[in-house]
Amino acid sequence: MNHRIVAISEHPEMASAVSEWLLDAFRHGLSPSHDEQVAKLLAQRAPEETFVLFDDDVPVGTASMVTNDLPSRPDLTPWLASVLVRPQFRGKGYSALLVRHVEAAAAAAGFPVLWLYTWSAEPVYARLGWERVSLERDSDRNIEVVLMKRDLG
Image (cartoon, rainbow, N blue to C red; front, side, top):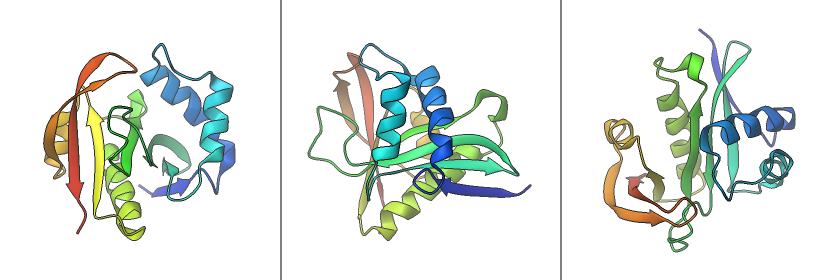
């Protein structure tokens, strides 16, 4: 299999598809519209970036590095966000490839730590070396989430 990961900043034609995937997977009451999400993806500036993983020529998933992902924790940056493998491609290790790619991008940008929050995938991230820090409240969804970090040094 031939894997490659591209940045949306270099392949803006992927923004609409990624927006659909993200809204299908993560939509909540405060989610942007499709067009707003596309505009947000296309407006990212370094160090923020959204990546798309291809297997051969098929886009299978996405992940982002963003400066702020949890409204209750604006003191922490950057964040691994929106890790998503399309349902028909799950179980093949693609999420690990995406996570490792964002980790490498954060390290290359000089960040010593990367943050994430999850409400359902703590074991997945723990297997990849992420450490649980605390329980937090996601005010957008009004749910409790696990805050995790990854030391990049």
